Length: 118
Image (cartoon, rainbow, N blue to C red):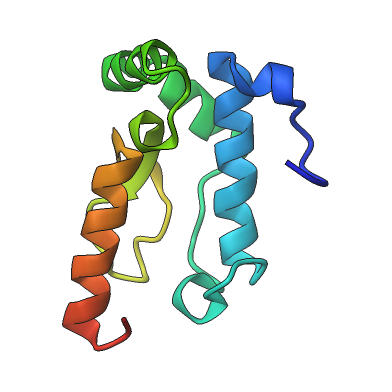
């Protein structure tokens, strides 16, 4: 996990996982991703709001527990997905939903193909 502020051990707790995911999303909006042209400058919620949203989400906990049962296989990990790719909505709580990582990748590929990016 390199320079991220969440240790490997904490990453396997709901709160640690949510903190890590938030820092990854925030990095995208600041241009620290492999495709900054897609995410740079998008609105993003505050970290405390994101963590609270995750901890209060039954779907997050369902996916988190499935991820644990899978032996922490990446495809099963909870992944915040933007319901609407409109840049004005960005990573705001009202525009996010929890999906398995594998589904989020599929949705991203579909969206990129529609935009002629992939």
